[in-house]
Length: 272
Image 1 (cartoon, rainbow, N blue to C red):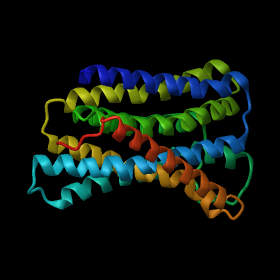
Image 2: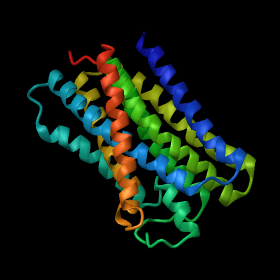
Image 3: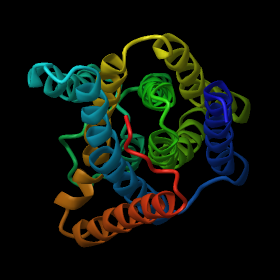
């Protein structure tokens, strides 16, 4: 399969998944908070495993294969840059932890350390910005020419987009109480990643594997931030800590099963 076709398919899957997941609460109304927490925890586990088992190892391998003498600070710096970017966005009100925003908006569960945006627009804009980094991860993975990397990264990203889109549907309907406005919010979020997938693929298609590897490492840093911040509030809470841990472990197990499946199918190749 040609790389362009891969990019288009993954962009289409990301768009479709986000629209379906976000459309459910818009069309069906209020959803179980427990279900939302479970989806978020499992998705965080999938994303965490995607970062530690795919994005970071493959990013290192690609970078070193292109430039064996590269200073390790470049690689570590790319990871830190991704993590810090997410932290900066969070600090300036463009947070991605919408499930916590909505949860705390209605109930005081002692999560006073979580930043709360004042309106739905800032929440949707923040999540859409985060979705742009998701698209970068998939686009860079496709540009690497390694089908296994692209598939594994896409699984992690798309798994995380499901609860994010679901939460946008809930939050937007709650704040706006307008179905048409909620669909507009969801569409803005849904198209962000596909656009960046294609842009990243096109822009990185003709560059050295060193820069593709660094882009994947940068994405790995964003994955680490998002995955940990998603579940930390629940892990720190005595009533939800063990359940949140279980959800993350389930997510990690799912990702490992996916990787084993890719390995057995012969799709995983480490010949960079």
